[in-house]
Length: 241
Image 1 (tube, one colour):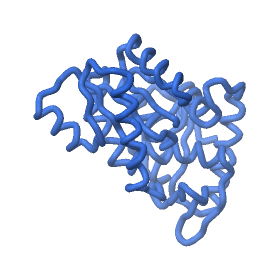
Image 2 (cartoon, rainbow, N blue to C red):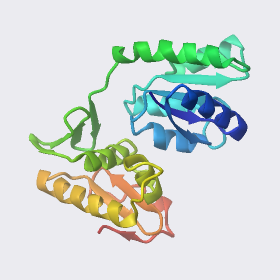
Image 3 (cartoon, helix red, strand yellow):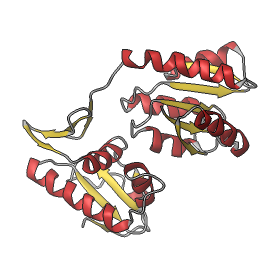
Image 4 (cartoon, helix red, strand yellow):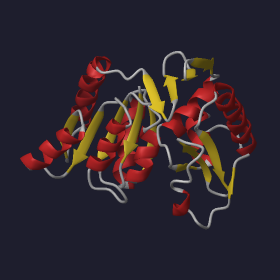
């Protein structure tokens, strides 16, 4: 099982990771809500364990944003708050389960087993952004009746970018998610696959494009004729290749 932990308490996140890894699971850990959205939006996880009270974005907000993106990954919210209204807020945001602290490792694993058994009930097979549709099973990218098959790395990068239109994604994040944190891949690898994707967008005749923001990363823009969002980064020189 591949698990994402979103928890700002580094001691707790380390303890959770150790419990899960001892059970044979692969674990990634991030420490604030914004990273939770970025990593969770890749759809590469079997389950997400998320704290409610975090910097930048709380767990309710992160859950809501992921669900709006079409991410169906089961989400287990962790919190020290056990008031009924907090639990209702968690479920209303799109969470699948809710567990209050403190808890035992046995209780945690029981919740995760229950979540993953239910995972197949809701599946999003496509990711749509702008005029593009990405098939999450076949790795085909389609636009206006035309489609083209993506390699696994092209698919992984396209999925990350399309899941967060308008958001700047760093090269480091793309490397960590598409190649893995222990990979020796570097900036040149990312640049090469971004170039491949741009050529495929052009082949499909898509109005979307992938912008480069120097020293910041890449951004999926849903319509190449609009400058929407560029003003949010006035100090970042914009290039497109």
